Length: 242
Image 1 (tube, rainbow, N blue to C red):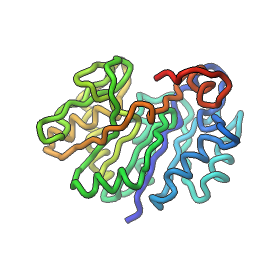
Image 2 (cartoon, rainbow, N blue to C red; image 1 turned 180 degrees about the vertical axis):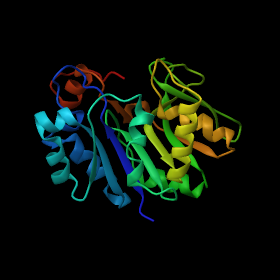
Image 3 (cartoon, rainbow, N blue to C red; image 1 turned 135 degrees about the vertical axis):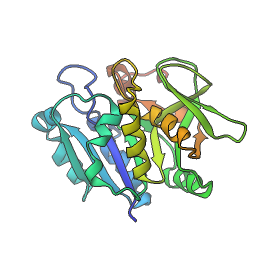
Image 4 (spheres, rainbow, N blue to C red; image 1 turned 60 degrees about the horizontal axis):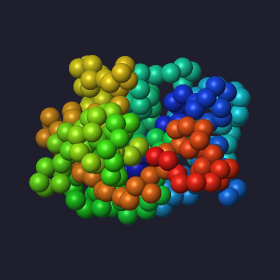
């Protein structure tokens, strides 16, 4: 079956009237183009979740269709209850047995995606994420057992030195849907939002094998503030802040 890659670009803008983060530009290449280039070898069906206001103001849907021919688009008109809820809005775009990768558009990873996914498949994992070293409470975190498998995930609370980037892979999309719905039923939210990271806790309860791939923190590129986007675009110099 075709792998599905769900790219979440439906969250709040970094500031009022700011364009979609997908329009961040570096060396003449838009972020959406860079994402498409890095994911190209996966030969996956890409699905973008976009805000209605970004379509109305900046025609982001047209940009996506030109940058990623054949991409499917899900439009949201208002803020959701968090990334997990946003992802569930695209549930009709993938089948339960299809492989699913969920990416946050405002967290770019400078990694080899095909190699990373191949590693997860070879390890016979049910789900996985990419992690980098940190202790800052702004991130999601996972704790591992002696076998290197996830036993717990936490949001905005360091439970290890392994911070999860905006990359969540599921061997079966149905496992993601079940876990997200379980999480919502149990009201497992943080500050009023349901996070993708916490789907892992529901999968642990189902005895699923969840792994990680650790990367150098410099390969994690957050695009969550005006300053971070300016650094990415090269408008200001200085060390990139995470």
